Length: 281
Image (cartoon, rainbow, N blue to C red; front, side):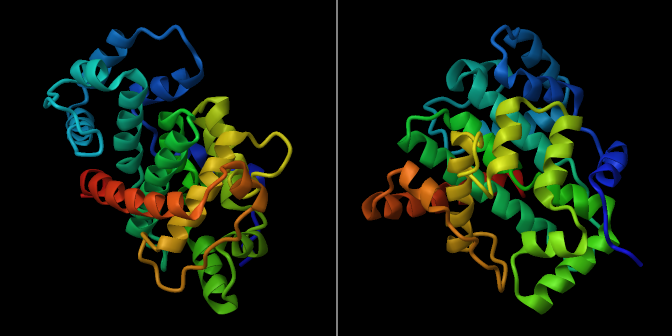
């Protein structure tokens, strides 16, 4: 069977994917807008009990080291701020949204371990660069979401990608392009369009493998470096995982030195443990 896909093939299957809760869609769409009625959104989220419970577990984890225990979404917003809480709600929703796929060879848990670790690392990097930590966390979590689109919609074809990668010992991105003709970045952008992600998120998803490309944006640079660091630390615990090439441009843009890197590795590992216990339990 031919495994080649077109961008339109990917777009055509997006309707079959599970959709995020409507309130989460609203939250994602609100990332670039200023006039959000926070109390209305808080009330809407509270109607989804599973989502609320997971969000509050995350808010009360030591990642945020709150002095008080928050028991409602509104309290979380008061103590953490709207952006951080929106982040947590998104993380709680997205990690529970996709069913484990029927694609032989695809490790669903390892996928999320990598995504959560990239989110944690991106947050630390963003703090270092005085960049918005909440954008960085969400973009880190979603950077490879296109892979789940391909795995969920085209499991047989994606199994061929994984087999090719094992055989050729190449990067997954190259295997996707060779076998499918589309890659997870394009699939991620198709989903970002379908789910109405903000431009900020689209740029980060689209540019995380080529942060030096014109117009890729600074967030793509942060996600690129976080992605490489997390592969190097092997937090997803995937055997034979190759560390992707690091863009020199991105590395210099973040002016990282050895001392900061050691701190970055430590903090990423600690936050990853905490966050994954809540999100991936």
